Amino acid sequence: MTELSEEELAEIVADHDRIVETATPTSGLDWYIKWFSSVMILISLAFRAADGEWKMFDLVFGTIGVMGWTIVSVMWRDRALIMLNVVSLMMLIVGILNNA
Image (cartoon, rainbow, N blue to C red; front, top):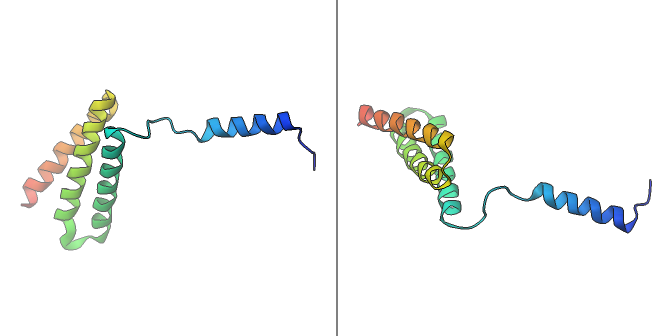
């Protein structure tokens, strides 16, 4: 095995730090909304996987999650996310209305 010099080791560590840094901010209101909404969508998917009488829970938790992501996408001014989440929100609301 080859021994690395201190300079080579420092360069590898610096490259690693650049790779693992997150691209999105890790604080602020959008961060909290993003994570809360992601958890709501995961709960929605768990209800969907359970099938049966859990459909309304799936729709409600999914709606809450997508509403949160719609807010985040507007905060980020990301048109692709805005379009995706607004259309998803409309579909989920129609699902709630059809199952009420």
